[in-house]
Length: 102
Image (cartoon, rainbow, N blue to C red):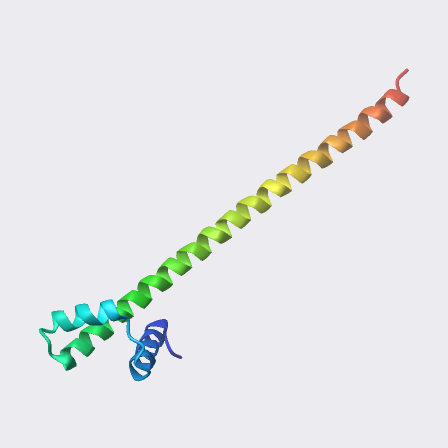
Protein backbone atom coordinates (compact mmCIF):
# COMPACT_ATOMS: atom_id res chain seq x y z
CA UNK A 1 0.00 0.00 0.00
CA UNK A 2 1.50 3.31 -1.10
CA UNK A 3 1.76 6.05 1.47
CA UNK A 4 0.91 9.63 0.69
CA UNK A 5 4.68 10.27 0.91
CA UNK A 6 5.19 7.75 -1.93
CA UNK A 7 2.44 9.48 -3.87
CA UNK A 8 4.21 12.82 -3.49
CA UNK A 9 7.39 11.35 -4.98
CA UNK A 10 5.37 9.83 -7.82
CA UNK A 11 3.80 13.21 -8.54
CA UNK A 12 7.21 14.88 -8.62
CA UNK A 13 8.62 12.13 -10.83
CA UNK A 14 5.79 12.69 -13.32
CA UNK A 15 6.31 16.45 -13.19
CA UNK A 16 10.01 15.98 -13.98
CA UNK A 17 9.28 13.40 -16.68
CA UNK A 18 6.78 15.75 -18.33
CA UNK A 19 9.07 18.75 -17.80
CA UNK A 20 6.39 20.55 -15.80
CA UNK A 21 8.56 22.12 -13.13
CA UNK A 22 7.82 25.07 -10.92
CA UNK A 23 10.19 27.68 -12.31
CA UNK A 24 10.88 29.52 -9.07
CA UNK A 25 11.47 26.32 -7.13
CA UNK A 26 13.75 24.96 -9.87
CA UNK A 27 15.75 28.19 -9.90
CA UNK A 28 16.13 28.06 -6.11
CA UNK A 29 17.20 24.42 -6.29
CA UNK A 30 19.70 25.18 -9.06
CA UNK A 31 21.17 28.02 -7.02
CA UNK A 32 21.33 25.84 -3.89
CA UNK A 33 23.20 23.23 -5.98
CA UNK A 34 25.74 25.83 -7.17
CA UNK A 35 24.74 25.15 -10.75
CA UNK A 36 25.13 21.36 -10.66
CA UNK A 37 22.08 20.05 -12.55
CA UNK A 38 22.11 16.60 -10.89
CA UNK A 39 22.26 18.07 -7.39
CA UNK A 40 19.67 20.66 -8.42
CA UNK A 41 17.32 17.88 -9.45
CA UNK A 42 17.72 16.09 -6.10
CA UNK A 43 17.21 19.35 -4.20
CA UNK A 44 14.18 20.17 -6.36
CA UNK A 45 12.64 16.79 -5.54
CA UNK A 46 13.10 17.36 -1.80
CA UNK A 47 11.68 20.89 -1.98
CA UNK A 48 8.76 19.88 -4.17
CA UNK A 49 7.82 16.88 -1.99
CA UNK A 50 7.93 19.18 1.05
CA UNK A 51 5.68 21.62 -0.81
CA UNK A 52 3.19 18.88 -1.70
CA UNK A 53 3.21 17.60 1.89
CA UNK A 54 2.50 21.10 3.21
CA UNK A 55 -0.30 21.58 0.67
CA UNK A 56 -1.84 18.26 1.76
CA UNK A 57 -1.64 19.24 5.43
CA UNK A 58 -3.28 22.58 4.68
CA UNK A 59 -6.02 20.82 2.68
CA UNK A 60 -6.65 18.38 5.54
CA UNK A 61 -6.76 21.24 8.07
CA UNK A 62 -9.32 23.06 5.91
CA UNK A 63 -11.36 19.88 5.61
CA UNK A 64 -11.30 19.44 9.39
CA UNK A 65 -12.34 23.06 9.90
CA UNK A 66 -15.19 22.57 7.43
CA UNK A 67 -16.33 19.39 9.23
CA UNK A 68 -16.28 21.15 12.60
CA UNK A 69 -18.17 24.12 11.17
CA UNK A 70 -20.77 21.80 9.63
CA UNK A 71 -21.13 19.90 12.92
CA UNK A 72 -21.62 23.18 14.80
CA UNK A 73 -24.23 24.32 12.28
CA UNK A 74 -26.04 20.99 12.61
CA UNK A 75 -25.97 21.30 16.42
CA UNK A 76 -27.41 24.83 16.22
CA UNK A 77 -30.18 23.58 13.93
CA UNK A 78 -30.97 20.64 16.24
CA UNK A 79 -31.13 22.96 19.25
CA UNK A 80 -33.35 25.44 17.38
CA UNK A 81 -35.66 22.64 16.20
CA UNK A 82 -35.84 21.18 19.72
CA UNK A 83 -36.62 24.58 21.20
CA UNK A 84 -39.43 25.09 18.66
CA UNK A 85 -40.76 21.61 19.36
CA UNK A 86 -40.64 22.22 23.12
CA UNK A 87 -42.43 25.56 22.67
CA UNK A 88 -45.11 23.89 20.55
CA UNK A 89 -45.62 21.17 23.18
CA UNK A 90 -45.87 23.81 25.91
CA UNK A 91 -48.54 25.70 23.95
CA UNK A 92 -50.46 22.47 23.38
CA UNK A 93 -50.20 21.58 27.06
CA UNK A 94 -51.25 25.06 28.16
CA UNK A 95 -54.26 24.85 25.87
CA UNK A 96 -55.30 21.50 27.36
CA UNK A 97 -54.74 22.74 30.87
CA UNK A 98 -57.24 25.56 30.42
CA UNK A 99 -59.89 23.15 29.25
CA UNK A 100 -59.52 21.03 32.39
CA UNK A 101 -59.50 23.83 34.92
CA UNK A 102 -62.26 23.74 37.47
